[in-house]
Every structure is written in C-alpha cells, then in structure tokens.
Amino acid sequence: MFPYLCGVRAGDRATEFKLRCVGLEITRISLHSYRYAWAERALKCGFPERFAQQALGHNSKAVHRAYAKHAEVKFLAELTAWMDVNSEGIYATRPWKIYGEGPSVLVPGPRSRFGGAKDFRTYTPEDIRFTSKGSTLFAFVMAWPETRNVLIKSLALNSPEVGDQKIAHVSLLGYGGKVEWSQTASGLTVKLPEKPPSEHSVTLRIKGLGA
Image 1: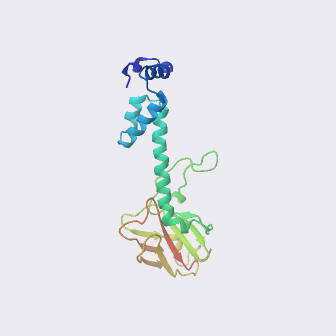
Image 2: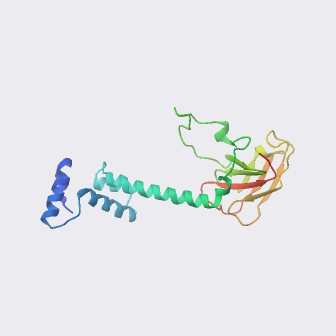
Image 3: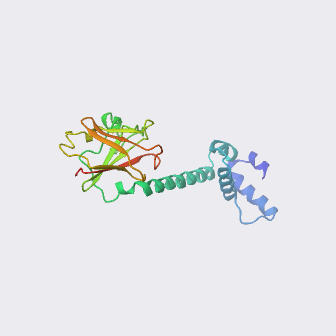
C-alpha cells in the first residue's frame, strides 16, 4: 500500500501510516488493523505462514494472531467432531484397572517438572487407553492400524485384569456395522472396518467386563 514504509524505522511506521491515511482521507484504519486484515486474507488464500511473516515482518503480531486463530478454530472443530462420535467413552466413565497398554506405557517418556509428559510422541495401533462404565469397557485405539487388526493383550482370557470373565460383545463407536472379534489367551482381537469413524483415535465398546 505504501512501499515507502518499508524503509521507515519500525517504531515510526504506525505514525507514518496514519499520516498518509489522513492525507488520503482514509478513516477508521490503523497499521495494525491493516496488517491483521492482510494476514487474514493471506490465510484464506492459503498463503504459507512463513511467507506472510516475510511480507509483514517476522515479528508481526497480526500474522501470529491470524494464523493462531485459524489453528484454534481448526482444533476445536476437530475435537467437536471426535467427541460427537466417541463421547460415550468419556462422559460419566471411570478409570479401569489399568489406564492403558502399548509402547507408550512400557517405555514412558521423560516427565516434565510438573509431572506430565515432557514431549509428545506418535502413538501406534498398539497403544490403547481404557475407561469403564458399569459392565462396559471402552478401549481407545490411539492410531488406526493399516492392517485393520487390533490386539488388546490386557483382555486375554485369564489375564490379571480379566481373570475368568468372558467378553459378551464388541462394537465400534460411530460404526453402524458389526466388527469381527475373538477373545483368546493372547488377547482380544478385533477386525476394524475399512475406514475409521473418527480421526486420531477410535473407541471400542466392550460388553461383559466389570470395573
């Protein structure tokens, strides 16, 4: 809009921008609002963030806010879509005998100074998390397996967690069809459908196991 401003000291650009707008009888606009509007338009056009930073300055708060706002909206939309499918395994549930199984449990990552995970690692289809509600157990498969086969070792016949309890029924939240499953001494094996009903993780509803 005003190429001259590129050569003006950063601390004086807002004043120079305002003076030129007044001279052109442009009202109700500031350098900040112009930058923010430009950043939002760039985002809608698919302009990469790094190029937007170069165009408006690497320290531009407008770029940070516009792209961060998009990221927040995208995250909330994804979370809402996931909860629409899997909320039964979250609301009014309780912890099970163990909270999970898989590589992330066997080899835990370093802890932060507040006790939580220090870093975020990619989950595998072997990573399972559990919640329970009465005689129903919910098993969250943290990554979709390419083979569509899930093995939950903690639910093996005569395992310490299950004992002599036998699973009565297994279904997949968000999926209207039936899934093939079997409970053996190796664990609970489930054959998933061709497409996952939700992104990021899916939830198995397992009947017949108490808390």
